[in-house]
Length: 295
Image (cartoon, rainbow, N blue to C red; front, side, top):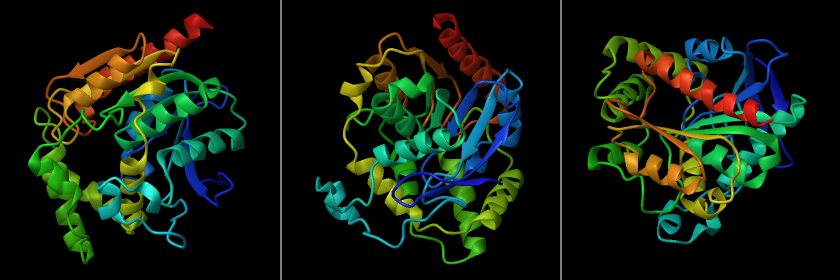
């Protein structure tokens, strides 16, 4: 897969593309601790078939992109208690990574879609660099207001689990976590889930980036004031039954952005099960179409 230098912080990003290079770019940004392969190839192909050049990439500290283990490391206890000074980077830096990838690809403006932490990143990207954004889609995310998007105790505990000590434990923990935060209306086959997690570990087994990404989330400021200033087609997709980021996160995001559309999906949790892909792809394509109509 291709790899490109992203910005002056020494980050290099692993990425790949789907669809025709002549189509408008739709950039997919994944969530906390996840690799770009968490955007399944089938979903990427379905979006590309709607007339987009789909680009997905590994965030810093995930997958095959640069791991930020050489510099300052976060004091999560201090950050959680209101002192963000030890965070090695913020969501704004991760948004800059995405902008730098667009620069490397020669793309002036793109449709941007983010899931979970990726939703936070694309929100920040739209706030900081609105001239680079054609349309915005935030999925199963929140605006960082410290009020909306709470977790159930069981789902919140998933984020605080100790690192697994070996591959089999990592697979077992991954399966268990996915079952806790997944979609109650669309339960996944445990064996297929196990195979997918094993494939992700085969690609990259490091987990130390999780804490730094989590620190970036907690240390970053509330995006609500910036979201109120946006003037672009915006879609918010959220699972009505999301146990990790409850529906209030999506509702608060949509409320903050003028003219935003909110799609609450019954039975959907904190993942994108395949039976929901047609609905999700239709909604993303329609939102992007609003940008074309305004051009």
